[in-house]
Amino acid sequence: MTRNPPSSAAGARASRRALGVALLSGAAGAAIVLISAGQTWGEGETAATDASLPVTASGSAVSGVPSALALVGLAALVAVFAVRRTGRTVVASVLALSGAGAIGTAVLGAGDTDALETSAAEAMGLTEAAVTSVSHTGWPWFSALGGLLLLCAGLLALSYGRQWPAMSGRYERAGRRERGEQGRSAALGDDRPEDIWRALDRGEDPT
Image (cartoon, rainbow, N blue to C red):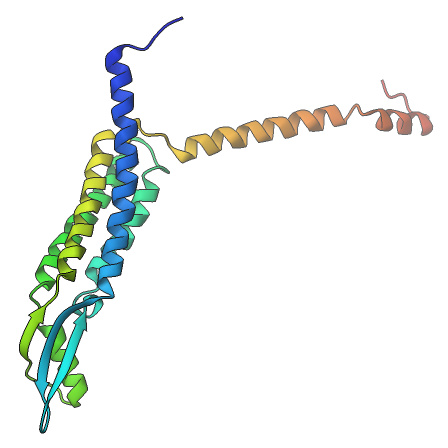
């Protein structure tokens, strides 16, 4: 009985480990970015007639880019297993770039005030409104963390993706096997006993 070399076995274990980490980090990263987009990123106050009116801005109001990139990254994570060779490298690159883009846009949005001013203007019914006492929450940084997880998943896919299994190959083999079984069944069906008896009843020679 032949045994795989120790280096080959270690490489296979590393590939499987990288596969599990990439799946978990990619899915978790996309979920974190999408959840963060619905949370409050900025808070402030705008002056009303006799009082101050609180205004807030969610992550999606600050920028819709992180959410869009998270969805692209999630789709790329699934597509990694549907393609091979060069296609897998391209999709893994898209996954990594989605994570990097989500990080950048989240960091830029961490100190954004435009969304707060827009919210204040809508609350006051004006085209422009000043916002004071501005503060920002930690949700933009959670979004950046999600982008980092997506980036890690993309880098793992770039490093180990060529060794990972492909769904398409497995389904193609299953399809060929099913078609072969159907072909054999059809061929056997030509010689079923009931067909032979029907041919004899019609006065035909079944041979």
